[in-house]
Length: 143
Image 1 (cartoon, rainbow, N blue to C red):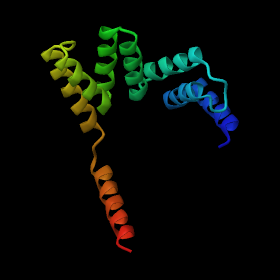
Image 2 (cartoon, one colour; image 1 turned 120 degrees about the vertical axis):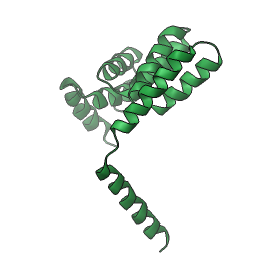
Image 3 (cartoon, rainbow, N blue to C red; image 1 turned 180 degrees about the horizontal axis):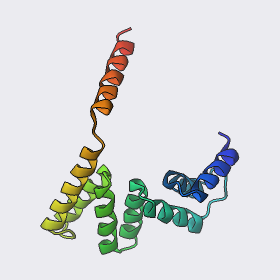
């Protein structure tokens, strides 16, 4: 693809505070697409995205902390990401509970927050749109 144009677009969006753009820039710096690989810039944009409320960025910071032996920090990142509806974080927290790194109360609170975040995204309009999408997909596959 046209990574240099994408890089300019995402940089501009990130400057305007877009968390998704920050997250995408972190991936671009990690993969070296359109830019030279740069671990420092990757982490900067990942942190900015997490601060901006991007659940996957927060989860990735948790993975990073875990891999560097910072289990308490990792668990905190997973709890925040779960509260924003990130499914992978709930799985990580359950695994960490089984390993003894997360208390029962903290896990229960994180799971409740995760469910609340998921419930907050539900609406009759979204459900109708999802039903329509399923019908159209089924219609296409039957042809």
